[in-house]
Length: 208
Figure 1 (cartoon, rainbow, N blue to C red):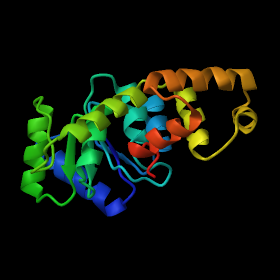
Figure 2 (figure 1 turned 60 degrees about the horizontal axis):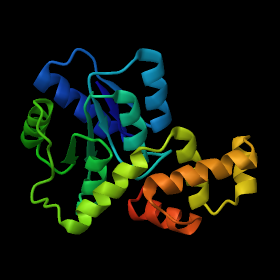
Figure 3 (figure 1 turned 135 degrees about the vertical axis):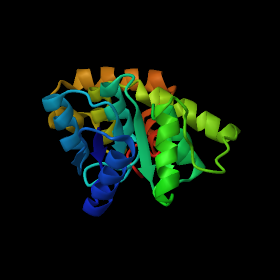
């Protein structure tokens, strides 16, 4: 199992709790998305991933989308102190199989993991998806279909970079940038760059 959590005490507590409760042979803890991805490359795909949303190198649901694309059917669970309905909807739409509050008592957290690893989608108590959250989930799913290069370009669009600068920073032709932007707009059903950025901010893709 891989735990992606930048708070050392929280990471250690989760590791000890899950190892004791489920007799896990090995639990690896890392503090950033970059280290998580490096671990996947070096050691292969773990049985499960537990992910904090706010990491030093990424915030928002970008990490969910990035890791889930590499995990396939292996479960990814988000654990966070932030349990707003719109964030929960986006996380689940991005491919997570559960969303667990850090505020849960130990026994309830263990039970939540047991249910989730038996195939149930575990959500915060009292969460109810309304129509707006359903729309948000559909939009998040569309963002999850972007390639890594398209995600890199989208991040720079959200930072206000023009095509020429994006071309320079990513070392690709400006025509290629335009082709990727056209593909991004098609996938998320946006009509221009401004709308692309607004929709990315709406799902809190990069933690804005």
